[in-house]
Length: 124
Image 1 (cartoon, helix red, strand yellow):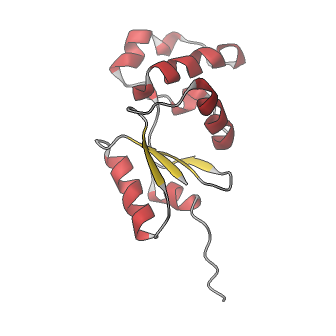
Image 2 (tube, rainbow, N blue to C red):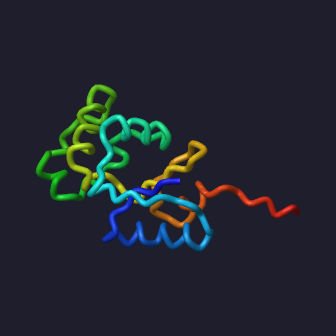
Image 3 (cartoon, rainbow, N blue to C red):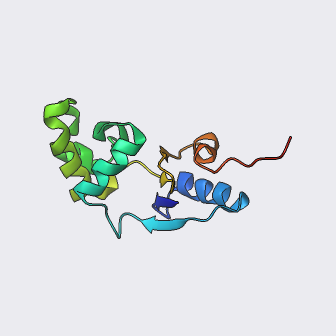
């Protein structure tokens, strides 16, 4: 499992706490220092079942600078959005957790983080 974080983000720290409490094995990716490229973003979006505008932090100053609020949110604009996320990783919603077996989630709640953890069979 991999988790994309910004260490300054409280939601990221909370997600890490849940993963640690559950004894999950994971790799941390500080995505501002090691940004995903467009191909990685496409793969993660497919795993999330979301579009790039769904994981864009539109409240960031960079979003306003780019005028994202005026960009179309349709298939024709998808590559433009992905390019903006790749070029400006500060715009990527966080944390994003990708499980080894396929699922991915934007882990902004404890429930979302737990949703990608392997289920534990209690034998009951």
